[in-house]
Image 1: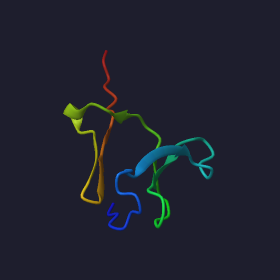
Image 2: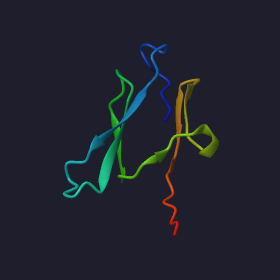
Image 3: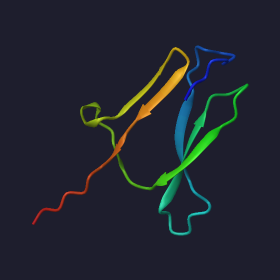
Amino acid sequence: IFYPDLIDPSKPPTYKLEADPTSPNGETVLLRFSAGPPYEDIAFRIVNRDWEHSHKHGFKSQYSRGILHLWFFFKKLRYRR
């Protein structure tokens, strides 16, 4: 997400997961990005599954040169007998 006009560039934008009020059984959550003025929040509806948080498996959150990058993968459910 591109944020070229932040008032305080030393404070990076943040993201958080929130409960989705339109999902009756909790299958989805809202991924909300907030940066402060002059920008409004942006929210995406995603499935409610655990994230793979290790850097080795693709998780990365980075803010540089006015761009917020967020890469993540969902955990794979492995079946074992």
